[in-house]
Amino acid sequence: MLDNSSTIGAAVSLRGVEKRFGANAVLSGLHLDIRPGEFLSIVGKSGCGKSTLLRLIAGLDQPSGGEIEVGGETPEAAARDQVRIMFQEPRLLPWATVQDNVRLGLPEEGVPAVLNGRALGALQAVQLEAKADAWPASLSGGQKSRVALARALVSQPKLLALDEPLGALDALTRIVMQDLILQVKRDVGFTAILVTHDVAEAVAMSDRVIVLDGGRIAHEEMITLPHPRPKASAELAAVEARILGAIFR
Image (cartoon, rainbow, N blue to C red; front, side, top):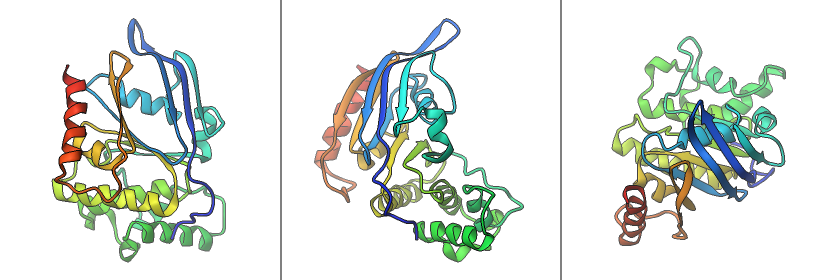
């Protein structure tokens, strides 16, 4: 299993963050604080800057202005050992076994037996250790997503960035994966930032949901309902309705 003795996650701070592509301002003077261990979701219409914001926090791109701090470091520095990202596509190497794909999340240096043990521990955390020697072609979509999650978590990141990682899954598998991500987060401890078009998914998983519009935070919703959250809940439906109202107003 993964070690849960290190931390509850990284704090994230954004101050006056801007991102421009030529004359197009995608983010404008954005301020945001994310608590250690918080699960934050970012929603909004297509083109509102959700994925751009996530990429800036994860150190995959640089802001045009303002400051970002992740776990006390710049995003570029934090990306080396504090931050990992899970994309919609699992991006598994077809010529490598499941365990070897997970090992890609670790530095190449190290004792092979130790690295293999850590990879197997990550697979145990996502309940896929039985497939350690399998090839990616033999896996279902949900199993491939589990491998991608294990690869993202094997290095014990303090921040997990989730860029619509469940978008390609069927509805039932998606619910199972939502529950699994939350379970691993409870067991291990990390900060999570999810970008999604699915408001119901954001409400089911998050401590807080923000709506982006016009490059700024147009709405913020704290969700204090305990986990596990029932899928058909009047309280969650009311939260979802408020968020949808903020998106489409």
